[in-house]
Image (tube, rainbow, N blue to C red; front, side, top):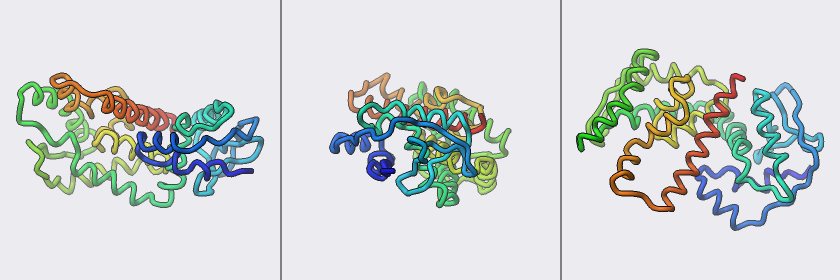
Length: 261
């Protein structure tokens, strides 16, 4: 079978959604070469089949996921392609490729990167003015800080301004212990995506734990930005980039939720 994902690897895997769109615009889309998309269960999980043959990732690994609901979404993406295959319309496939090719063989490195994010977490760095922004940060972010302390034993220090504050080792260790509940490469890929898009490992963990939903996580992550927009406005390019990033986070959040389905 033609390895279609190898042909699309650059466009499917670039972490920047705007860059992906640029890549896709510069290259012709490949023609759809299969008729039927299906799934079956194997030792590796639920595989995706094109005309009965398993799909492989750009890294030549089997495209398989741990639950049927996620497999059904992959089937829908592949089956939804028309005469041409458009990677821009395959966000779940792209996320699974990242997990299989990028996270599975580098699990500890990805895990450690999320833990490092917690040491400089967005929610710990507070404005000292204006008063309205200070109040908004306190009202929005403090409940997550308290949840991390009470539910996970991770007691982080809050700082005014942007000067780096070394967080207590016990707080980082407690966060790491909580993150250890998510040992599957796809779950970790989802958490890494949410962490990098929000700038907050605490928001990613709270989302995974069901403490907040995707709408709340996004709003809290963009609290400062929304304050600036309210007072100074935004431009079309910035708005478009933000919308693309929101779509990325929604996919990661929904796949993470479906990991237990």
